[in-house]
Amino acid sequence: MPKTLRLILGDQLNAQHSWFDEKDSSVTYLMLELRQETDYVAHHIQKVVAFFLSMRNFAQHLKTQGHTVNYVKLDQEDNSQDLEKMIQGKVKEHHFEQFEYQLPDEYRLDTQLKSICKNLSIPCRSVDSEHFLTEREYVKDFFHGKKTYLMESFYRQMRKDFTILMDGKEPLHGKWNFDHENRAALKDKRLLRKPKTHPKPVSDVVKMLTEANVKTIGKIDEEEFTWPCSREESLEVLDHFCTQLLVHFGDYQDALTTWDPFLFHSRLSFAMNTKMLSPLEVVQKVEAYWKEHQDTIAISQAEGFIRQIIGWREYIRGIYWAKMPEFAELNFFNHQRKLPDWFWTGDTKMKCLSHSIGQSLDLAYAHHIQRLMVIGNFALLAGIHPDEVDQWYLGVYIDAIEWVEITNTRGMSQFADGGIVGTKPYVSSANYIHKMGNYCSHCAYSSSKKVGEGACPFNSLYWHFYNRNREKLENNPRIGMAYRTLDKLKNKEELINQAEEYLKNLDAL
Image (cartoon, rainbow, N blue to C red; front, side):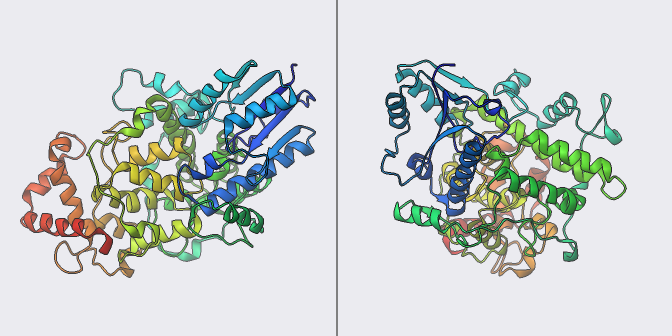
């Protein structure tokens, strides 16, 4: 084999990749901590620390396995902070004869690496990251000729292709989807279990970021950083999910509560998005555990989890590659407002938002219903520009990489794509938030009040959203009922006026 330089990106920490099947003295693996990755958006401090720590752990793992690794930290003198210059420099210094990289998951990096390869004087080759169940173009081809990409049909195909929860050609228990059984509010806090954490000091990484003046958001406990940052830790979190949390996951995956930030969610998204765990091994582990414990764990618990991974996660990654780069410019409703200042502090009188945003800033984490039906719901009702929403979500969450963030945010959450990802906008009044948890009982606003002092902003903003977007939404068959109700409202003018006042004073809510 020619003397080869292989680049490993920060979200390509896949110890099971075929690159590592054999040790080859002619191969050097290059890993870089770069300002282009810390600075393209203001990231949560925990996100940056988790990435760098996981990268360092992975580099050490490769070294112990006998591989040659050239790891360049952010503050090293020989770090030019320029990806192309670093690759060109290594090629020239060590006389490499070939350059290889795994296909990146972000469009910007895909474009950048193709450009770099054009300027290299040696042969270049890209290989698959060997993580996802489908190729980049699979979803685009699967939905060829369709305006809306219906996730359910894709999900069923994945189940068949990988024989997950199947009985021959039919789904186990005769149903593909148990979503209607996955919508309970949590009433008994005694069901809760503590998450599996791995406390470790990270003050050295934090010090490095501080001295380099890397701009971050959020908080961090430098002495006890708890996120899994190695494959071994990630596997322990997966085991914990199966043994302690799976039994109630499906029931309460949509629940909203101040009692616990994680509920029965797995905390595996960062581990999977950095490829420390593969989606197939995760779903196969969960399926196997459920099969062994069917007397105590309902299929709806396992199916709800598996659908999120081989259904939704795989599907939105395909949407990303089918629709980028144009997807990043979509703004179906032409929303133009800026995020309220309290998105950076959590300092709002609306309890659901103060809790969900505060938790995001404290932990770099919120589960999908907090992201979609609390934070995203408000941003859509308030008419916030999708760029503002994208940048906030991409920065604040530990698992946010553009391929997964933008499709969920600009697509599912903000409907800025006009219906590629979702068949309707995901908006609600306070009624949904009240039904799903206990936020409203601790709030300065009344969830039952529509207008007047102390009326929950969600209620009037909900009708204002439908009223101002009538031309674009009225013919959507999934939301015709909303317009029939709107037309019958006796206090419609009061509601619209109430919403207008709130929209003028978003920072004061």
